[in-house]
Length: 492
Image (cartoon, rainbow, N blue to C red; front, side, top):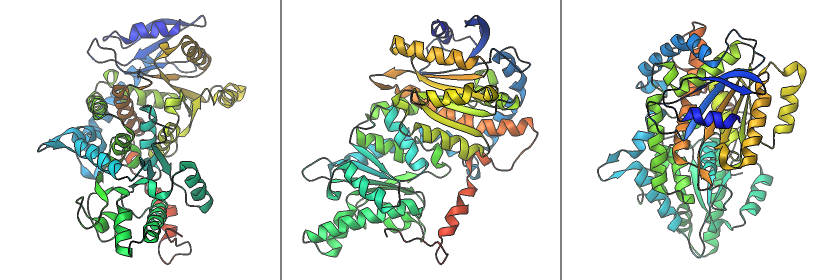
């Protein structure tokens, strides 16, 4: 069977390609990503060329050789930019920074202490956490929570809407009165309307509740603030949220506020920033597992800075993406196979690719749910040479049916499309922490490298990397500015 052959290759530290894997009586080749160690990776990538191949390459090993020189140039360019604060690449070293001790504590320790403190602020019942944020502020924490097996447990909810119907229905969904909820506000500036609107609504409701309990306005505001943790920019200005709430817990107000959105870390690259770690800590993700996850992400950063394309996981993924696009397989179909990937995952990967790569044709979905419509699109005769597929799966031997199912889908796609296969190990009903760290950090690098490699092949360079900036979101945000036709009033 296909996956027995895959497994036998994945534990070989010296394999850069596999010879002649039989798939439906057709021979194809596979490249697997390994380091110089005999230990099997928790996260493994493999790339296969289609059986009906319209490219000049017989296998992915040949593809890698073709793009290797350009990929090496890309990595050198990235490394030269990495420590430039203007390049927005702080996410590369963020896992290390979170674990580094300053005095007796690391910032990770402080994040967990603050999550514990907020959880302790309760009366008769444990309070669920409501996360207020949009985009990467939401999708990263939500996806991380689900991969850790902690989604849909009634401990964490996410709110990101602006209309009164959604607000009313959300309160029914959580099934707790507002005084029995805690909140995490995630916004770099604090001026993002969608988040500010929700923050204002919930805080006003709490102030009103405590005034009805007999507290005066000042006391009610202080009590309401005790329900909130705030994750925002570290630098205070007159206009931003940090400037209004201050820096130190226990000073000026009762917000928990020593949580930061680090400079140089865009929302879609913030899986390991304070908000994601805080949410998972609140939900019960052990700190020891968080350390395992961050250490693996840290190691992956090192591997992804290797200038040898064959030994660079993100470099190989970028080569796969650019090769597929160069030869007409322009539409990326990303499928996650399993519920652990579902909540947040489809939105996170979509945001990571589309916000970074701008013009990429990209769709994401969770399987098996998406198999009917994905198959209709993929196997329609006029479309069969337009797609390249990325299948993200759990360890295939979790069950015989799962192994056969994903094998059959893989074989079907390989008839006409290049396929990237991403395998994440599981542990106790969740994705293994090491696999999460490796996977997420590798995808960060892959996305940036894909854009850089496209420009390198086209001999086009830029002063700043468009993959880590998102200037076009201001097009709609600017419409909401004060005194404009569409000026918005948070909380109304």
